[in-house]
Each structure stands twice: as structure tokens, then as C-alpha cells.
Amino acid sequence: MWNRKLGRPTAHRKSMLRSLTTSFLDKGKIVTTHMRAKELQRMAEKMITLAKKGGLANYRRALAYITVEDVAKKVFDEYAPKYADRNGGYTRVLKLGPRQGDGAEMAVIELV
Image (cartoon, rainbow, N blue to C red; front, side):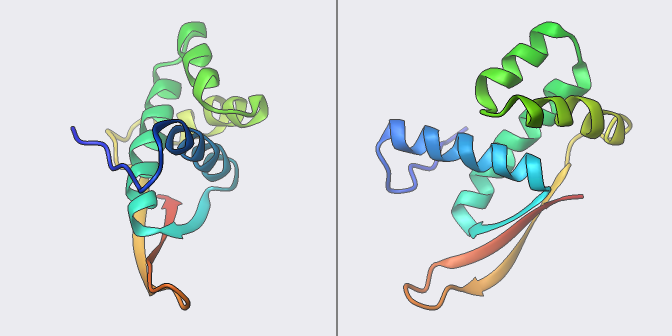
């Protein structure tokens, strides 16, 4: 599977995706560029899948990526039961059109 570099050095890209993932899982919906949304979708789905599996080890793995403990708890307590009978596809990316200013393709990513 290929990683998109998003025009950032590795450390900056990883940090950006961690904060986007944390923010998204906290709010349930976020507006960003289309490429960032596609990368965010991969990581958010992995975190929800970890929560569905449950257990202390998976909680700690999720907490190692999610930067706020309350958000990790929310994923395990709310999202895991909500998506227990669903085999993936927990998020949806909808294109919004170009951003005024630089013309970047914008998208909204939300939980299904």
C-alpha cells in the first residue's frame, strides 16, 4: 500500500496525520483537503478496527497513535459498539470543490 507524502517531511506528515485523526475521532466530521482526507480515512478506520477488537493491548496501541486519552476512550466506548456489526467502511469522504485562494480540492470526511 502506498503512502501519500502530502508535500511534507516524514516527521511533519506523521504528526499532522496523528493530530487530524485525533481531531476527527473527537468531532466525527472534519473539512480538509481531499488527499489528506483519503490518508486520514485509512488511519481512522484502523483505530476503529482496533477498538472493535478490544482488549488492553489494542487500547494501548490506539493510545500510542491518538494524542488525547479521552478521544481514545470515546473510540473504544462509543464507536466500537456502534460499528460492531460492520466490516469496515466506517468513514465517508465527500468532495466539496476547490478552495478559494489556492484551488486545492477540498473534502469533508465524516463517520457513517
